[in-house]
Image (tube, rainbow, N blue to C red; front, side, top):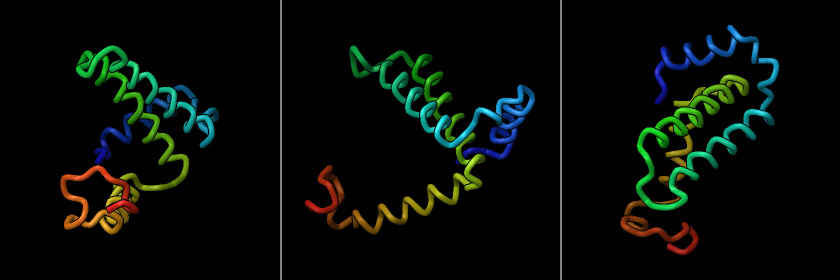
Length: 106
């Protein structure tokens, strides 16, 4: 998912600036939502979006997710893999392939 090099660089930047004191789960969740809103704003007037702006905002979202995972003491790879398995169970291929219906409508 996110390389150890990237994770370490994000945490080092935070630590060099003494920003961990501001990184409560609540503040980080707000920051993820704010940055996700800015990512969505890239598509406000059309489906394409400016690639440079999109990648910039996506980087912000991922950065805050890395910081939140660190704050919560969870491994991003582990939680994503666990969630994927949960989703596989809810949306079996034979029922969900090519469909966008919610699991209870399959």
